[in-house]
Length: 551
Image (cartoon, rainbow, N blue to C red):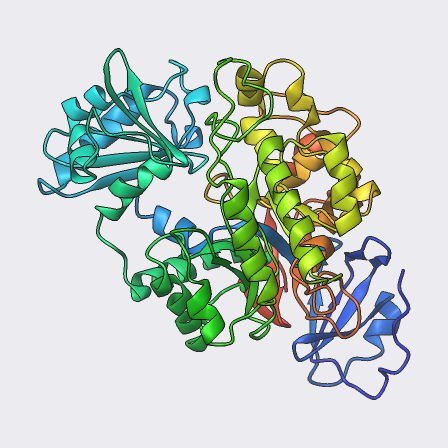
């Protein structure tokens, strides 16, 4: 229990949460009650001591013994993209899309409601979870959508399948060469409709561009859902991945107009083509600029793809295709140049790198950047950091590089990893226990909409290391519940230089609190998956309440 009453007796709390099991942080432990003044934590301690601080106008919230934690912080997701995806076809297995035919039926239903020429887009299918264990084919999409362009994106977001009309609009034909950083799918002497990594870009550019207002609606739609899950903060992992500047303006408008439901650290695209770095820097939008609702975070580049799609760049070929090492999206020289530019301008970096070959390229670039311009607390990151070698771990430790992985990948994609990487390599992915024990400040996230933003699968995966099929990946890498929550709160804040503002329930930090109907510390781990958030407080104010559960 924490005694934090000293120096606070003269201040009357605006709100008290009491009679609960309040987890304040990994080193802080538990308290029974918390006092809030305006948008900050005033004090935490026993129910009796905190109760004595109440004044006549203090609101008292009885937690009824429930577990409360600092507001959860998803350290890598795509907020506006998730909001936009809500308007597309839902192709997830959880939505019943477990066969190719089910996907085709959903496309046919959408076509029946659409005008000819209207785009049909969807996201979320995983060919590893389809009964046929394959992607839909271009000809199958042609059969159900002969007069509408169709683009269906795999769950990972790095691979898509298109019908002929969509390929034609993207000017992709049989003789089109593979672009650098991408691959056009071909089989049996014809296009099969699959587009990997950069090969998707021409088709994406052929689609109507959303406006800034469209993105504001998407941000509000997605953020409101996150609040219902107990998520009060996120790192938006790619502002500028779509049309560019309108995405940045959307976050500024949403913040200005009070339509930003969650606190956002915004990652700016600084890649070869998708790049808003110069625009942002000219306006003084460097890492750390902003306020407690919208703050500029790192700069993003893509160096490879995803393991499930077979595009994460590895030094050892894939188990299911001995000719495939993945897809490098940048050269070493390009990576060096992009990293050094952002580093010199004062930005933190957050490159996407999943395979060990891509991670090697990023680490090389970091070493050159730090040699050029020392910045010991820049906290450069590696997003995902799925498969690294022991020697690379030592280099990460030497530079203080933060691995920003996704426990939900273990849960949702774990079974597929064995299919593409064989019986052994999946056990070495996302070693959270090692990262934490070695002081690397790992964080927890979902990469939503790659996986569902629901935090309970994440917590479950960190504690059990089990996939949704029950297979353990990397036995010995399990975390305690406290460690898992630590990655979802303090470490997520640390990863964007926000640990002094949020991530723990201690005096002076933002009063962001999540209350759950499940005590993760005492239940069987399987019960974590069915947990629910019942109350979310952001800045001392209730922003979500499930029914009239609490008084």
